[in-house]
View 1 (cartoon, one colour):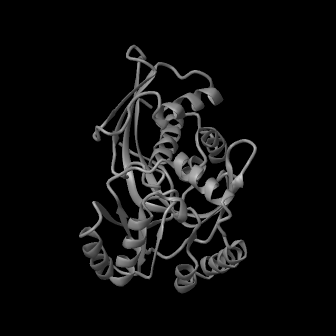
View 2 (cartoon, one colour):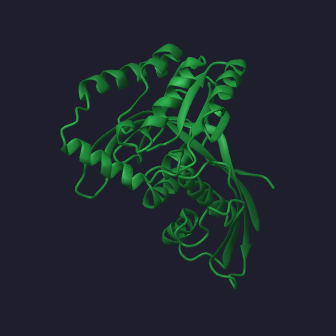
Length: 303
């Protein structure tokens, strides 16, 4: 295949409990992850390699297009598994997922890149192999390949598929600044060292109730048990609380910061209420997006 189109879906964390830092520098986590129908579009074309192994262009000037972009790392990791690819690859990224927002936009792009390479070079690698390659790139990449509703453990690479949830409408509210995942985790570690209580027992009970709610597709149980213990470590904590309060005041069933933030997501059950919540959040949040749950991760589409 000479080319491919792929879509890279964003994610949110319905539950995120981060533990102490491990010896390898990662943190042990327990998380319920959920794919969204918010996605980046990616267009791939095989080249003769004369312009370099990877040529990346993007509609958003703030997106780095050099070797520090996870798309480059995905190509390198793919070659590490399969051997050098013939020629090079040209990628155009139509960026829709906000940057540095806790929505796994970079990981989603890496996941879609692995699928597109497998498609273009007709290798037919299994999903498990692709997810193993993805884990070498970043902790969220395996989930962004699998998608849907998933329980993630380890550093995020061990995945257990769960029942698909009803198609909640999701309103995302994002400040106009990026959050460094590394800095948020460093601050989280400092707070733990200072003895901030993390209510492990309460979190355990909430996770059990949430998983039972997912199994039964019980909206109330899901919404009542959303948790993210990184909320206390974000530098945007005042805005996070403001967005949550406004969303709930406008009728959202629940609101929570996703991942390392600073994006807040609000859950509602219908489009009319989603419009009301989005209307109120738009007054205070620089970026407001209405989307919904998805039962799929990254995908290759026919050109």
